[in-house]
Structure formats: C-alpha cells, structure tokens
Image (tube, rainbow, N blue to C red; front, side, top):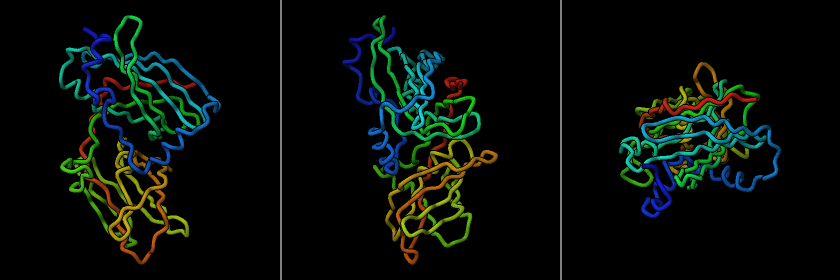
Amino acid sequence: MMMKKTTIAVLSAALLFGGMLHIPAAHAAAQNEAAQSDANSAIHFKLNPGIKKQYGEAAFELETLAASPKETEFTISRIVPENINEEIDRNIMKMNYIVMDNNGWIYDRIQAKEQWRENPDGVLARVFTEKVEAFRGKPKELILKPYIGGDYDDKSTALAQKANVAARLTGKFPLVLDQGKIGSVSVTGVDFQKDKTVLSLSAKGETASLQIQATWLMQNGKSLQCASKKLIGVDQDVYRYQMEFPAVNRKAQLEVMTKRMTPVTFLNELEMRVNLP
C-alpha cells in the first residue's frame, strides 16, 4: 500500500527531512548567497526528463532539471510504500547525490530541501529539490549518482573529534593525509597572500568533493573558516581543488586537519543520466 494523506501524522521528523545533508560550515556563505539570489536570473534551459527508477518497492522520478548562469536545480520525487524493506528504507533516509557531468566535473551542493506532496491519486510523495553550482562550459550529459556513506567515522561526539587527522605544514609537498576507508587527500601547495591563504589539494575518485570538504586549515590549534572551495581541474580521475582561508601568521603553527571517513556505496540502480541541450 502506498502512503496516503492520513499517514503523514505518524511520520517522524527525520523522515520529513530525508538523509544527512553534507553542507559544512564553510558553505554557509554560499547558502546565504543562494537564498538571496535574483529569482529572475536568466534560464539556460528547463527540462522535464521524466526519468523513472525503482529501488525495491520505492519509486523515484526525476521531474525537472533547470540550468541558469548562477546554479543548476533538479527535483526528484520519491514514493515509498508503508511496508518497504527496512534496509532499503534506511538507505533512502541516508541517501545523498553526487552531481557530475560527462567531462568529470563535480558540482557542489548550494542548497537542498525536501517536502511532501499529495498526488492526484491521494498517494504522498516526498519531493527532493537540490541546487548545485552552475555548469562548467557546455556538458552533454548530467549524471546524478545517489550514494550512502561518506560520514565521519566517529559519531561519539557532535564534532566527531576522534575522527580528526592533522599534519603540520612544513613546506614539503605533497602532504598526504589518510582519511581511512574513503581514501586520502593530498595538500599540494599553499599560497600566503596579504588578504587570504590559498590551499591547493587533490583527491582521487568521485568522492573527492566529500573528502576535500572535510578538510580545514588550522592556526595554533584553531580551525579557520573556509571562505570558498573551488574545483580547478580533473586529470585521470584526480580532482584538484583550491580552498581559501583568512590570511595567517606564517610564524604560527599551521596544520591541515581532515577527518577519517566511512566508505561510499553508490546505489547504481538509481543513477540517472540526462542528455543536455
């Protein structure tokens, strides 16, 4: 039996909001900027792909995809029956998306939300809407890769401090930090400027964005607020990023800190590919 309108009263708050959203504090500025963006910005295109996928008893549909100079937005509806398999239900709750194109570029999340909608037949659907960065160039295909995992591997505290891995900046590169089962991140350089510090990093594979986002610059034991994170190149599955932090005292103790993370499992049966105009 599919979820009817009366079912909503007994659903948990966790179900309403879906899985964990990987948005670190470093992305707060990007979220605020997105919220204040011009609603009338020009649209490159808007599609209604209607791509449908089945995951156990759950039905997914990619309903809309819109691209503008500022961002790309897609909407996926999920219909989950009341008697769904428990493992599949847990995976849906924890699921996130890696968004990439046929050229290998990964687009970071700007904003995401989930809400309920009652369909004309009375069945309730959870509607997931996500905004990511604007397209680079003119890709021919957009790929939505659902996954679970990629969390900090210690949840004993709210800040997962036992998962911390740090290494001192000595000027010798690459500086490789082991992130556990998910892989490693390499610091390939640092540029000390008057008004900012630019950290160059790289990671291998499609989880690179998650790995880089779990990385900070530390000054005298205190983490610095990341002002921006930018993918600058992809070469043979190695993703190169730059992260900007406030200017630092070069005589201070400078470290790069990251997290040990759980592995990522891709839900390949739910992968969606959209041909772009």
